[in-house]
Image 1 (tube, rainbow, N blue to C red):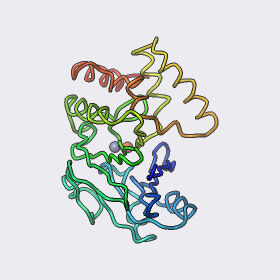
Image 2 (cartoon, rainbow, N blue to C red):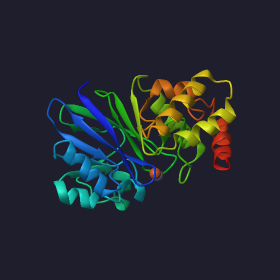
Image 3 (cartoon, rainbow, N blue to C red):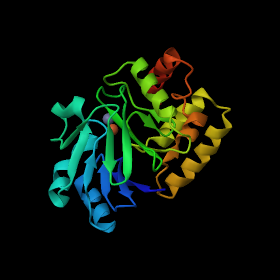
Image 4 (cartoon, rainbow, N blue to C red):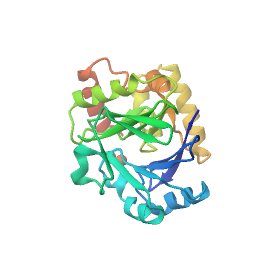
Length: 242
Ligand code: ZN
Ligand code: FE
């Protein structure tokens, strides 16, 4: 594994992600929305930061970038389509582009639904994918800008990645997602097992992420939706689920 990924807990329930290409020592942080914990984490990892990566424009994914950039002099990379509403980009990427973090190269995937212009970063060398607020552990993002068809397409694209790919998502929403998922598939044994594991991890103060793409195929009710209509119905039900 040439790429190491580690979650950084920030804000109330967000994750930034620390990435290091082990061959070159180059590092990146994705979605650095809160500067202080990201700066502390990078210092602990050796004090080198080459890149700040962005999945989408929301404040809880970008707000800390100027301060982190000022501290380490890192460059910023994000979606060209959202350049007008992102921090100033040094590299603007389109779906289908690649991005090199040292010897680890990411493929940029279009990832609409939660927002239009969102991108996912697939690093086959992790293997890992930065899924932003598109795919969560056992869940998906709210449809704030895109349609159910957008989200369905984005989830299926993530689902087509190799099963061992680590899903590095933007939030610790797992327990709430599991509660909803169990209402959809109460008899899903993989989901029941993940529910027990996630509960224990949270009680121990640990992240429940990353999961893998194979995990998500086993228990994510939005990835498992058989078509756009079923995804739409499940997303609407989740929006009103308590
Ligand atoms: Zn968001
Ligand atoms: Fe978010």
